[in-house]
Length: 96
Image: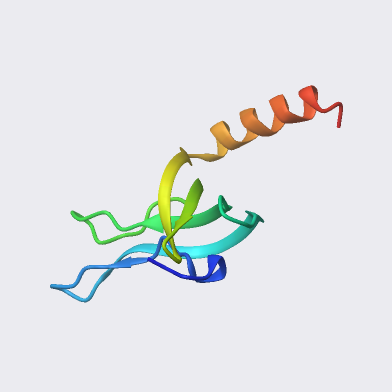
């Protein structure tokens, strides 16, 4: 695990094949401190076709323990329709 919140990533490479399995496209650190929240924009590789999926979003919460960040919780937004629904609810709740 990482010692700096900026170094956290969802990108993952299979050690046996050297192939990128999860490709991080972008990230935003939403909060810092002992309990940071990071939003990742990423794609997974389909093991059957080798093609990357449509982009997804993962919100992840970490806890700093003994100098490193350990994952504590996560939520995945799996598509554009779900993202739009979440945006609409947030706009309604916050009168945006």
